[in-house]
Amino acid sequence: METNKIDYIYLDSMLKEDEISFREQLKSFVDQSILPVFENTLPDINSVKNIIYELGRNKLIGSFINGYDCPGYSALKQGLICQEIERADGGLRSFLTTQGSLVMFAIWKFGSDIQKKKYLQKMGKCEIIGAFGLTEEDANGNPAQMKTFAYKDGGKWIVTGKKMWITNAPIADIAIIWAKTDNGIKAFILEMDSKGVTLVHNKVHTSLRGLITSAIELNDVIIPEKNILPNVDGLKSALICLSEKRYGVAWGALGAATDCYTESMNYAKERIIFGKPLVSSQLVQKKLVNMLIELTKSKAVTIQVARIKDKGKDFRHEMVSFIALNNLTKSVEIAREAKDIHGINGISTKSRVIRHLLNLESLDGYEGTNDLYTLIVGRDITGMQAFF
Image (tube, rainbow, N blue to C red; front, top):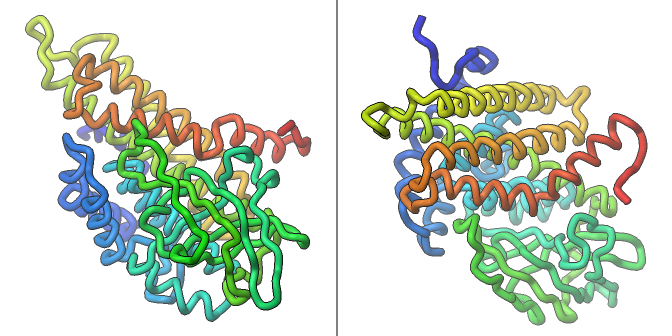
């Protein structure tokens, strides 16, 4: 039997036939419609927006939602979408999980029926773009320290504060804004064209170039009572939203690592050094074997968590931090090995591995950092809080 070079121990046996078919269709879509835009170029905002609308037309946004013209996919298929999208670009996957797993999820989970009917269908089609306003400059990693404040004035709320590094903000129609009130933390649907809203564009970043971000300044912005998410239970609800996005991050990291491995294998076979293919080197083979081992283990545990998530029973949000911690850590290592195998060509704009490496290094930071994931899992297994 011929060895499968990427599915070495036949993890596909853990998938159903329709899941494998779904993944292959996604691969074809990514190869034909997305990768060409990111190959050897830094896509402009219009190119990224065109891809975003294509994601909506293919019902890949908010795919876990039942109803509202959303497909209601399983957690496993939701993960496969993130995996294949990040195989093309981590910034694009970040858009997908911000739109779906943060904004749409918040409205679906904590919103009113009227809010769901107003926003979810249009957001799934990307006719409405959303942003998630939680992060603040002095409260990164600890949302409880946010300074954004809202107070009620009759039938409206007045909100003042500043949110930093907000994905999608420059192209967003709405944003979920989290703010402190006299009665705890609440979430509001902000119309981005409201008076008092100012965007402060971030400086160009060296990674996640497909990611569109800015700060949102709120200066006595009026938000009507009907735009408050009625079922929010303080900061706990915000953390549930973050867990949903981290689930997509964990799967996305697998996509980037898979691409790094396959690109490295192909390059090492084609690259001739001293009359021999690079792949014949002992050191290169060692790197490739280590990459494959870590990638395979990461995929196995991620599939297992997806199955638990789908069943609902025994699922804990800490499991998402577990796979996010593992997958980001191992994917960064795989991407670094891939860069080494490519040598000087590994930092060329013609190489996908440097883009994946830079993207993964950034995700390793702004998605809460390895330390935060470690402490979340540590608290779960020991019962002791060790954050401070």
